[in-house]
Amino acid sequence: MIELAPSILSADFARLAEQVESAAAGGAAVIHCDVMDGHFVPNLTIGPPVVKALRKVTGLPLDCHLMIENPDEFIPAFAEAGADWVSVHQEACVHLNRTLQLVRDHQMQAGVVINPATPVETLTEVLAMVDYVLVMSVNPGFGAQKFLPGSVHKIRRLAELRRQRGLNYRVEVDGGIALNTVAEVVRAGAEILVAGNAVFGKGDPKQNAEKLLKAATEAALEKV
Ligand code: DX5
Ligand code: ZN
Image (cartoon, rainbow, N blue to C red; front, top):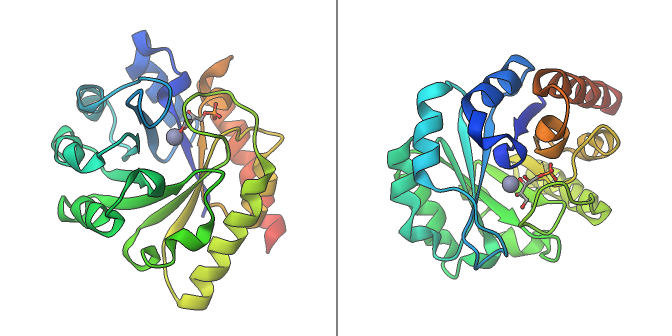
C-alpha cells in the first residue's frame, strides 16, 4: 500500500488550505509538515500554530517531521495542535527511547528519522517501538534538493529487518522524490512518499499528486 505525503514546505503559504485541498483531491493520504528550528537544520519554518490551522481545514492525518533540537519540549504542543504523527531525528535525541515514548504517550504515531550520513543500525534498539521510520534522501533543511541514491539501500535494509524481526513499522522516504526517482524507492520498499517540490513546485498540485501516485503504484506492482 503506497501513500503519498505532500510536504507543505513547497506550497504557497498564503493559500495553504486551498493547496492542501488540491493535493488531497489528487490522492494525498497524509500531509507532511516540516518543522525546522534554525539550529538542528539551517532553516526556519512552521510550528504548532500552523498545524492547528491545518487541522481545521483537512481530515487527512498531519505528519509532523520535527527537525528541531530538544523535541521533548514541543511534543505536547504538537499533540495539542492536532498532529497525528510525529517523527524525531535520531541525531537530535540523546534519549531516543524516552522521546519516542513521549510521542506515544500523547496518542500519536511515532516515527524516527535518519539523515543521509546515519546508518540504519543506529535504530535497531527502537524499531520495535515505532510506527514508521523516515529515511532522508537529502540533507534536511530545504525543499527541491537533489535525491541522494545512497538512501535506497537503507530502505531495502529496513524492509528486510522488518521481515526478519516480525515487526510492522512502515518505511517513509523524504527528499528529492519525483517522477524520475519514485520507482527506485518504491521497489526498494518505501511505502510513504514525501514530496514537496514535485507536488507544489509548479503546475497543479492535484495533477502532480495523481501522476506521482500513478508512477509509484505502477512501480509497486512491478515489485511483486
Ligand atoms: C527537507 C524536508 C522535506 C522537503 C522535501 O528538509 O524534510 O520534507 O520538503 O522536499 P522535496 O520533495 O522538494 O525534496
Ligand atoms: Zn520532511
